[in-house]
View 1 (cartoon, each protein chain N blue to C red):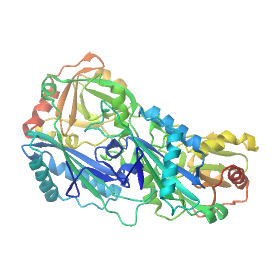
View 2 (spheres, rainbow over the protein chains, first blue to last red; view 1 turned 30 degrees about the vertical axis):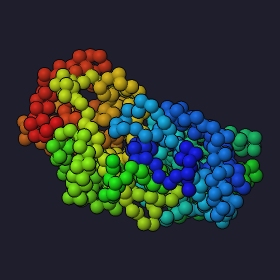
View 3 (cartoon, chains in turn purple, red; view 1 turned 90 degrees about the horizontal axis):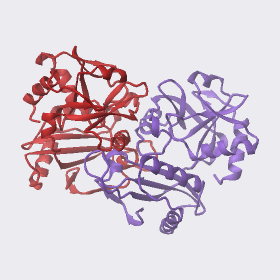
View 4 (cartoon, one colour; view 1 turned 180 degrees about the vertical axis):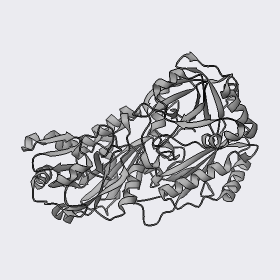
Length: 274
Length: 274
């Protein structure tokens, strides 16, 4: 079951610009014991995306929470952890890219089972580098918009051969995983790709950057060349549904997960119930 | 009215990956007196896109023509010219980028009114350069996929201030218009952007490249720096719905439309009933 602008439905208009052009945004949010995790951060990113794409959708936390409660009440089979997906599109429009005279945004809410990653969180996940290039979006890089063929094609290339695949931009700089942001440790410092022109600026990535100093960790944003990965001693995959996942293998080479990456995981998971 | 896999409908499943990720392709095709124009070229591009995105949709010209006839019979208000839009998505899927175990592609057909461009074809249209950057898609550049935020944002910037807006890549090379490909004339030769990493490889653009020699025109694909536009003596916008449109003004500077660009238009419009 989904809620479309608050009404139960499982179909949307074919004329919706979300389908026609990917003209919209989404958030996937971990819900633990009925409460959305990193809620304000998700709302803030959605708000920023609507501003940048000029979608006149009023992001109301109260209204969304009420609708989440309605979904939870209807979905008895959802366990104490589940995932709320919010899609916001520009709504229906005619043929053609230009905006319709009146925009009537569409809000879609749905609940999904949370991924089962308990053992991956403890023992780590494997990672492979991919040839699928990260797209250079320029001015709207970083948004969690609905143009995600990039991730679909990278997932096809990964084909389940590892837990996650790494994507690089046309200049060979590390960008992100197919569904995660990346933190690296080279025995000196922790760093994460800059994401100025490509990638999704994940909510948990930003939360970590904002709080690292308080946790006694020094973390930099940096341009990371593919060759640099050979010097890496530790790596973490992060997203707001799975938390911090240590990487135990990079292209077949074993990585030690009992390092500062584990410390990063502990700091984050102490604050957020992943 | 639309046809969804041959059935009348006006809604699609919220779970469709076309909405979730723009995981699909489309074609917009001019229909004149009931016949689709550049039909084989559109089918070939759709077929190539399905292969590249690994969408197991069998592009059948006969089946599509039968469905077009059904739409035309239902749409008495469509005049002798209208536009057929075909959307093909990977179909419904769960949450997550990885492909569903069974892919059941969705085919959507709809008819729209043709744009009224008779006077623009004769007297030309105005063009402005835009700041909205063309996205660098890399391996799937050129496809007419559903990830089209790029064109939506460029259209917002253009805001109707000219008939068309020109987009450049991050290196400042001309890519395309928001809904057209570009041909330029510098009093020496005619050329069009290469589109190796960005842009949509339009069906009419390719038709022109394939036939230019036969028409006695020499046309090259080239990298065109933004500064080069100052030397331009003639310009044409082309797409498979509007045909060849001469440009009469570029950023306020008048361009002569009675030049080889007019000859290009005549050659194309002799063959195709734009």
